[in-house]
Length: 76
Image 1 (spheres, rainbow, N blue to C red):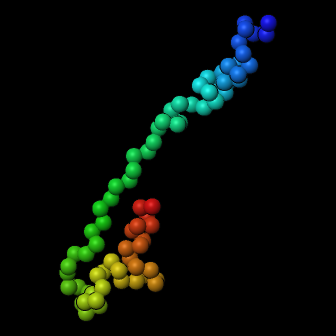
Image 2: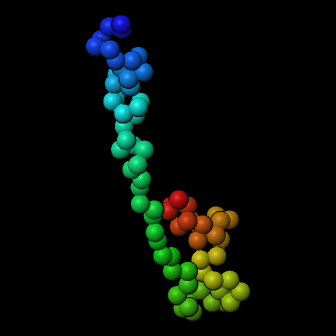
Image 3: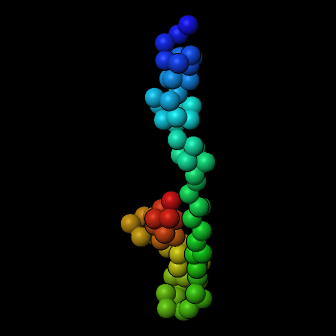
């Protein structure tokens, strides 16, 4: 008979690793809530005219990158 009160080696190994098959159950089932955001893309003001006649303000480039991309990158 095996030492340790008759326990199999698999059950003693899982007991050493946290008691529940090698990992914490909370780590597997816990998930973060997804980030939700609303981006206001244009205010329809006339402050940047005539530049904004062809493009909305959020698509105007800032350092060759549309301003909207900075907001999306911040949220990612």
